[in-house]
Image (tube, rainbow, N blue to C red; front, side, top):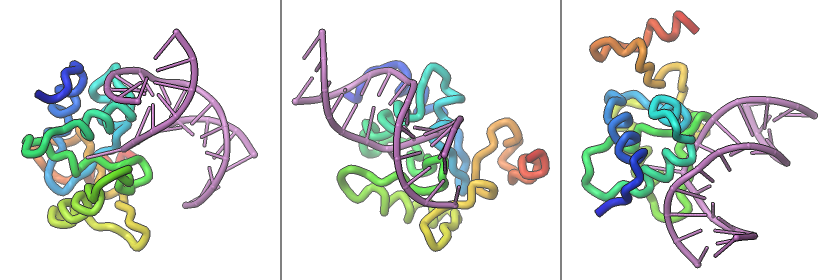
Length: 120
DNA sequence: AGGTTGACAAAGG
DNA sequence: GCCTTTGCCAACC
């Protein structure tokens, strides 16, 4: 089976709430889960078995870039998946978080994040 | 037991 | 906005 720590499952459930075409940061997920740090979120996602229905690719770092993997080609696959959902990257490979960040509190029925931007 | 290693982040310069 | 600490904490030597 996959790793057992309680927080893993909570991380997965939270990540599942990120809608298509939006992204969240590791810190954001950690804060929602509670008693959890950004590093632990990355750790949990790295332990995610293949084929599990969790949109792991929608989690990026707070600078808007895809966190490089120590091994494997996961980062490239992640970028492809996001682009397929309409998430745009700039020349330096960064996402505009102002535009694409998931805003849970104002996510009322899958609408866009206009409210969030106005409040900022 | 002690040290290293991450799919990280905030603060200070 | 970039670079450098510093804090973080489970997993794995």
